[in-house]
Image 1 (cartoon, one colour):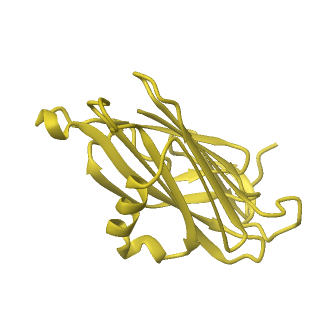
Image 2 (cartoon, rainbow, N blue to C red; image 1 turned 45 degrees about the horizontal axis):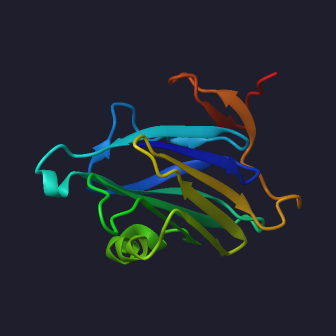
Image 3 (cartoon, rainbow, N blue to C red; image 1 turned 45 degrees about the vertical axis):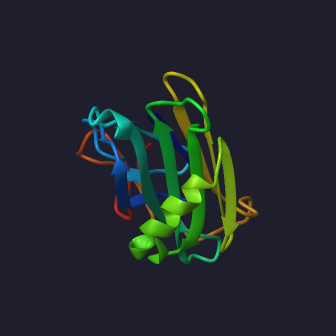
Length: 178
């Protein structure tokens, strides 16, 4: 399943944690940093056996700042069952909480995913997260991370710089990209 994450927070977000209930990340890891205004993308693939359990069911947490400059965690989770007969549908679930909340809450998040459907939105601590999943044979998960009142000024972490690893953009107070 292709997962796309758009950062509209006004600042960089960073990968914090992930949980695989079923399936695993593809060959390319989760993006470690996603700059404001950028898309991050990754593949999460189904396990191939045993067949009754074959599916992609996981979560990822990204950390960023709210308008007050406090750290918040955005949890993005999805379920793509191998067999979609009956009531087995693709589902997404997103929650925003204070930094560190999800470090021990994986079971709670799994239950939240079971109660959701193809679209989900959560707002907390001035942060907003929305997710959708396109129900098809090649599903795409789309998440948008933003802030309430995003037009207001907020603290930033520095100036953009091209990272030496995989052309990623990171922040630094010592260099600028022109």
